[in-house]
Amino acid sequence: MIAWKYIDKSSATISAIRDYTSMRNIINITPQDIKDLYDRMVSPRSSKPSHAPRSYNPGKAEEMLTSSLDKLDAMQERYRLAIEYMGWFEPAWGSLSDDEQTILQEFYMTGSQKSGASARLQIKLNYGKSNIDNLRRKALSRLSILLFGK
Image 1 (cartoon, helix red, strand yellow):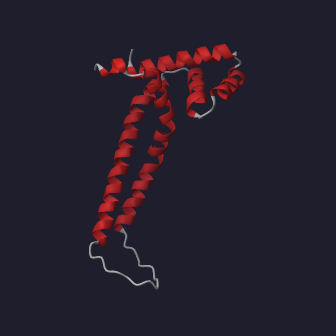
Image 2: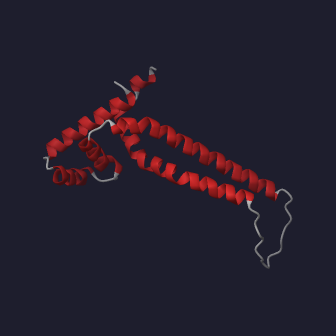
Image 3: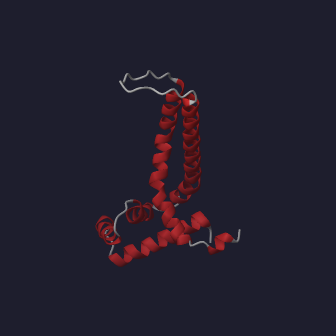
């Protein structure tokens, strides 16, 4: 496809790395959220006593049901997209070496400032600043190729 030629693959790769944690969280919590929503949809609710006057809305049950169904559709679509993302991202991520993963995690997944990430990696990996920067560029380029091709 011709659009791949014009995409900023480096920025797209960084965005994909930054999205990993939220996609993992979506996969972890959405099944329980869906189950909870189903439970709320099928279990009867007891009315809470209050002293406020009530107004009668004959369509309230239908409105609540359609609202819940809309939420359910949105949750299922979000979950489907997260699964699709993981199927695309994780094989490429798994192809990186441990050092490459560590460097990219420190720079892009933790939300750290570049200088702080670089200093922590210098201590952790026992490399100089220029080596860390070179390894980061190479790892980012390698992941970009794995995700988007040349």
